[in-house]
Amino acid sequence: MEQEQKLLLQWTTQRQLSIPTILLKHYKEIGLKEDELVALLHVQSFIEQGNGFPTPELLSERMTHTHSDCADMFGRLVRNRFLSLEKKWDEQGILYEYLTLEPLWLKLIQLLKGEEVQAKEQEKHVQEG
Amino acid sequence: MEQEQKLLLQWTTQRQLSIPTILLKHYKEIGLKEDELVALLHVQSFIEQGNGFPTPELLSERMTHTHSDCADMFGRLVRNRFLSLEKKWDEQGILYEYLTLEPLWLKLIQLLKGEEVQAKEQEKHVQEG
Amino acid sequence: MEQEQKLLLQWTTQRQLSIPTILLKHYKEIGLKEDELVALLHVQSFIEQGNGFPTPELLSERMTHTHSDCADMFGRLVRNRFLSLEKKWDEQGILYEYLTLEPLWLKLIQLLKGEEVQAKEQEKHVQEG
Amino acid sequence: MEQEQKLLLQWTTQRQLSIPTILLKHYKEIGLKEDELVALLHVQSFIEQGNGFPTPELLSERMTHTHSDCADMFGRLVRNRFLSLEKKWDEQGILYEYLTLEPLWLKLIQLLKGEEVQAKEQEKHVQEG
Image (cartoon, rainbow over all chains, first blue to last red; front, side, top):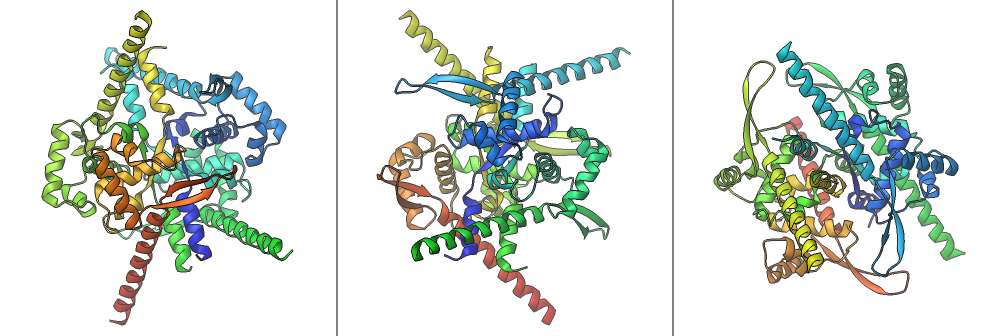
């Protein structure tokens, strides 16, 4: 197989990471900076590839931040409830830790709820006004 | 319809932006910082929604950067060939400008080609060694 | 630009359609056949490209069904509440019709709710038993 | 956590399957029927979840076809080169089999190449004409 075809196959068989556009539109409002958003996308991508607990080292290989900066960012993301570290027993009875983005999705849902309440109140105001 | 159901529908009917994982893995190697990557994702998202020419103002509404920083970043992304501004005549004969990420994809493809050449040479080296 | 590179660009710049895996796992349970699922994916794809009202003719160009079969299928999907036809006034005051998959998502959500209720009752049963 | 929020989390944390729109537009031209397309999407979805060798049984649980029909379809998809069964040694030296959609992507690429050649010849014809 020639080189170009190999490249085409490498492209066509890669995974795609799907980002909800609601996240892209509102990450700033829930308090995320761009590099934190990208860190969360990396985590999501590792989870989808079956690695539920990517380390700061692994992240720093892909990001323009040092290992130590990635560790700090991880801590901050967990403390500020964008990411959480959960524990589970697997089928062999071994306890393992994994990361989940559930808190991130809950924050976005809370934001959308607040916006909807605001929109309704404005509407009411206009009608009463 | 109750509020929760509205939220669910808002979530289920939103678009998803697909990011090739090759981009996520290699943006650092082609010289992109995290905030530049996010800017390109915003541009891609606007293009997919039918807005082929998002302005720096529009970007700064979503990003944690000022309007002026977004304008600088735009200039840098075009100069460094991650983004290009093209012109086209529409059906009514009106000239319009639009952004395209083609140069970004070409850079990634060049990177993959280089990696493959390197891999082959190493293999050859091992066999000859 | 050579042909291979053009092909690569055609591939890299195409859109991706994101399908929720919940739909892929449960379409059979909510009463969809495979060709109906694909018809809904085509509709979703047209909507995302800005065409909110693809006709049966358009569908039959892409599907292995005749124009008349596609029209029948459309009617069936609307009657069985997988698809609905809505009306809206645009900014120029012109009434236009568009298709939405909201009923499909509501059906899936109802299914998930039912499953959860069942799971809870089983759990209760086990605890009481 | 209340039921609605659980549902929202179930939705937000599910995977999305990305389908190239080039596949959606051209599957008919490369000889696929709708149920075969859906079978390939199921296979892709299983592969992305780490199951590289979904059986006809597994497919028939999700599809409106019987186990035996799914086995036939599998055979047909492999014979007609949409799907191929490959072998690999894993790190423990165990031989395992896995499915890949590479032949599908190659067919699509061949189709796009043919279309481009045709387009060029038509152009030439027009210029000479």
